[in-house]
Image (cartoon, rainbow, N blue to C red; front, side):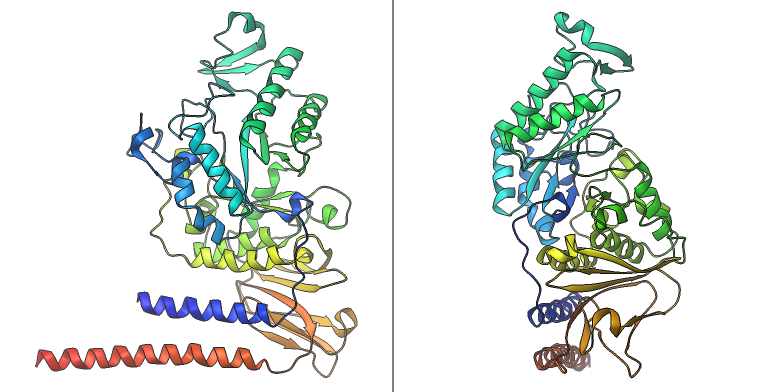
Length: 485
């Protein structure tokens, strides 16, 4: 079975590589916008335990306790994230905390010792940079532990405006609090060469204060991305809408769902009228997408993740999505990563990201909607250099969409990059795209080249390998029967 899977994986890789090598994909320029990025969210504690030296309060059997994941673990298993093509690794809150997910922060300067030392954190960031991945951290503005170091300082008693359980709220309208928070985030990102900050727990923070903090962060390095996981009018690099992930969940939980709202927060940026929006099917504070799925989870995940990666915006994916992690919001949704699961989704994501990362047009090109109806989405991304057509058939039947030669030109062909289809115009000057149910395809519009000889040769090699495998299995079975006689 393992050899069979290897054969299939080899076939897919060869075919994709052949397509990439025989078509012209514009090389990406130096990154200028967060729209060029894709974000992979992890919880340090739940990824991988690289060393037992920092397992001070670990109890893997209790999902509410620390499980042992650390910076060394992420560094050791970084190849998986790199393979999927993500360019930003969001580490969550890495500050000293009383909880595995960093929500009970006790300091804005000290690193959580169970995650590792400052040297290990520095080593992780260096490794990320060597792999062309930026490090992003969460910075909670309030709702921290009552044992926070500031809360223990009597001179800062008036900084606290409320307490709920073991959490306290800072007075985010207090100028001293604002200055202290700005100094803290600036010092931390300066010390560790952080390239992205997600501001969380905005609470009563007004826009002027948030803009002041963003400006201070940008002064350290103007290329640092600053985003939030809450809606705000501040000058963040990308927008966030609470309803976005619910929209995607409702569309892709099954076939033939209402998809009319899918482009609500996408088209403004696509038309050059706003900032890119964070596109996601869930986040670390919600139920897992798979919990809502009403059909086969791997297929649902392929369709939903592909839409976030291919629509204009900033793709954000939670760790474990690629292995169909499930669970309700909280510890159940924050399971330990299982590295022994099938890598089918990993390869699928990697293939789409390969296209996206190599083509500036797929990331920031002009956008033209072709069709968006009950789960069937087709759109075009184009520039002076390239033209792409993306089709997502999240319906229960094979569906056709016609593209006129008047739109894409004569003597062209549509080269499928995932399913390896080639579409040419018919006698009526129509390029008929027919897509099976629950399938995604990315077509590049290229000059008509006829038969791809290299493609045919490599396809033949794949079939020879597969037939050889079958023959070898038959011979093995025959020898085994002979020995048993």
